[in-house]
Length: 207
Image (cartoon, rainbow, N blue to C red; front, side, top):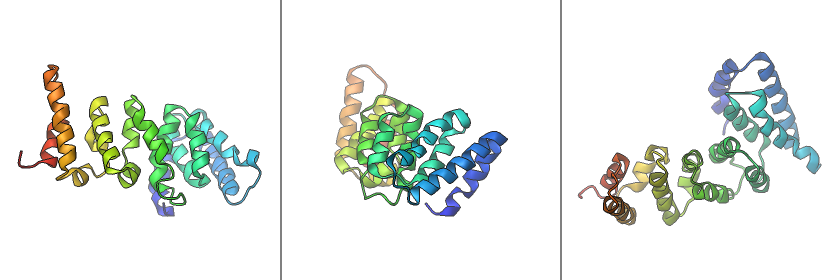
């Protein structure tokens, strides 16, 4: 993520924060940036994790944006992300999932287990956060198709799936899975959603 990416969001975030919250966030970002630049003591390195958790208390209503900034400043490795995700709240896990495409220092696909974990959840908030650009870039085709079905199962709009139209177009296997899913719903006397109809048209435009 280049420095300009944060300009507008940070301006909007500052406008939503109280003076004390802005001061806390500025100090937290300084601490986290300094640690990322070369602190070696493991206990010190975990200070950024504490600040990440504290964002909910210090930046109420804007904690997700604050956490995105802290994650970007911390540049955590995959092990640190996994640890943070493992004991995080839903809000904290969503912030981690949203920032994954912007952590360019990670090896390609290194954080994919976090996406896979979120997709095993039945929490629609986590599922929606998991199907962003990182999932589109790194999930294998079979797993990506199942992520699409998980969205349909949990009521997550397919618009949440990054680049859905481009990736789904002409995907015969996804079309087969969607037809099977539609048939199951029809057999059970349940409605077929507009999202499912749209997905079928994308995968098999001549049907």
